Length: 251
Length: 251
DNA sequence: GATCATAGTCGTCTCCTTGACGATAAACAG
DNA sequence: CTGTTTATCGTCAAGGAGACGACTATGATC
Image (cartoon, rainbow over all chains, first blue to last red; front, side, top):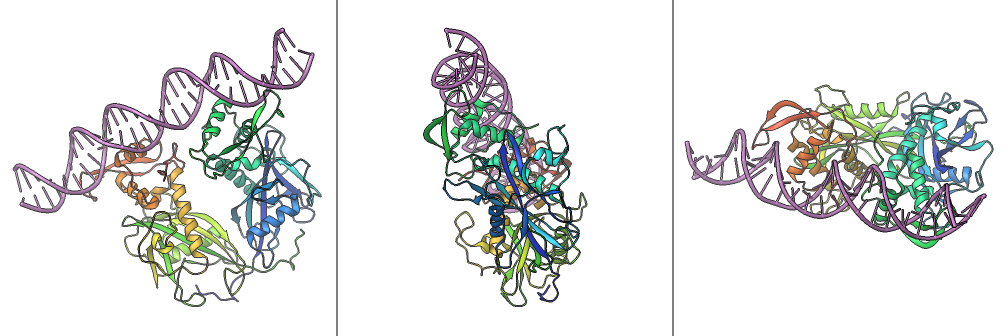
């Protein structure tokens, strides 16, 4: 098919963000309240239009900073860096009732932020447990109160993002993106437990992560912030792919 | 950011296809020759504009049928069905010199087609080994002749698609998408060898795939089309996720 | 027809990983 | 001092994976 500049239908292109963190042993996502129609007053994933001369990833990074104050992927900066990657693109013709909108969703994994949502356009933004946002079909049985459904097709996007995160921490070292720059083995274990929704054996987990080359680098320090015996502090090692992978317990 | 229908910049949205198959023990991709500028005369991935009222996946399926005659994912039809999934979206502001184009790339895994490219808009379309199309940085050392580079950012897209395929056949049963509806363990092994670019032990491979529940279902028939002792015929089982996974040999 | 080459299939052996779980260590709360 | 909590080390048995020997059933060649 030839390119004919007058033949292509016009689209709006947006980025939406699935920003995940682990708070109080629960996997949580950032949602914002919509201030205008459609879906006015409902919760939605943060996002916005891609600008005229802006790359997709740059748009995602800009939205992330606007909403949370987080900066993606600062190589080693102490400032809270977050992992950002493209998730998938959603473009059903009727997903926005006003016009044809194609949304390039991105996945962000962030450490738990000290202040609620630092430096963000935080009017009506909050962290909500993914289990609450997704209702029943989110894996393990669930009996809490149902949250009003998300706007647009954002529930589907969030579900895909959570599944991506669950799968990705198996074979990559990305679970450390949920941790502060220095963390203990126990804190990392609680990340895996929260994201997968399972309970892991502390002894086997310790053996596994400390035995995986390049995953963890001891800093020499210790901490007792979790109570109990002081734990060694680690930072993320250089490895991005884990070999052998962490395997989600089956069933 | 509020939606302002007059504020969003106009984009063109296309789908591009990375169509992979295994031919003569080599992983090959479908490329078409461009008939007009820019990049006139160069090879490119097949693709085209998304229509006004068309979902992204529908557009990818339509392009696939137009180019190859393949239909995606016919549940069990004998007619050559192919696996189709979204790969990633590419939207750098300068990726097309004429206008702002966002391309939603899709990955297709197809069995080797009997006729060169059946029923397709095949003027100037061909299968080319990915190793040739990608030049050096495609993993194992390479010393063949260099193919002229692909148009646009299609080399990057192809590289991502090949990597996705390599990784996906590890933990899913998608390698069977490269095989005809009935195939032998040896044929499946040659698929893995071609996609990964390695040599696998036939005995361990046989034990592994026949021992993975839901991967293969014996049909009862045998074939000698590969020469040697007749081999049992199988078809793909119901499992989509392999447990345990096939692991790519390291290094 | 005997022999050879080619594939396919079954077994064995050893090493390593994993899951289950006992035991010890070092902090804090009472 | 004692109990509680969390961290860390060790042991053991079961299963998976790589290396590789052995045997089988075809077609090709002499």
